Amino acid sequence: DGTRIAVSGNSLLALLDGNNGQVLKQFEAPSGKIAGLDLSDDGKYLLTGGIDKVVRLFDTSTGVERLAMRGHEAEIRAVAISPDGRRAASGGFDKKILVWDLANGQPLLSPLTGHTHYVWSITFSPDGKYLASGSSDGTARVWNAETGELVATCAADTAVGTIDFTPDGKQLVTGQGNSAQNLWNAETGELVRRYYGNAGRTVVVTLSRDGRQLYSGSNDGVSRRSSALMF
Image (tube, rainbow, N blue to C red; front, side, top):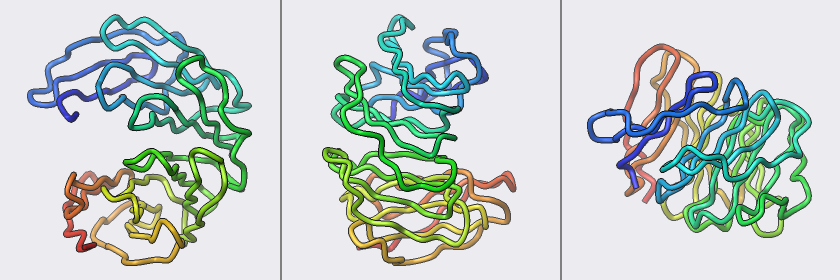
């Protein structure tokens, strides 16, 4: 809901107040280095993935681990919780994406395959019907989150490290290793618009809640805001 923020440093997890940055909860994860992190929309659960190849779900009120989901064969780099909090997705160095049932920690689908290099980012569409992934293979892929079917492939010109859906779920914004951010048609994979401005590699992109502003962060140490102009 935007009032709490989850952060990690190696195996340390912390929940912060989104208004003042105050630490609300801090606890240690048993998994060593954490590379992927996501907080449920209601703030009740925290999902992690890391070097131990295990996806873990924590109760943010107690710090207790609720689920440990195993199936990856290499380090996990990206995790996401669906908007309704019932499913999760994970991806990493084994190039595959796993979709999990958060009621019991079991896989819901066969592994989603197609990426030919590491998976760096994963996100669900706002309605939870679709799942998007970004990879070092230079593509972002959109999947049907309920069936695992590939819906679209967005062919970028370099590695896709960060990704986000527009509020209506019809478009997708990606951040690339060449400092650009691209806006794609999520149903066809066609490029809609390209944004420039970062001097370094784009490491994070996100859209405002109304979809009209695009925020990006780069390894040049600068955060930027652009007009998305998508409506």
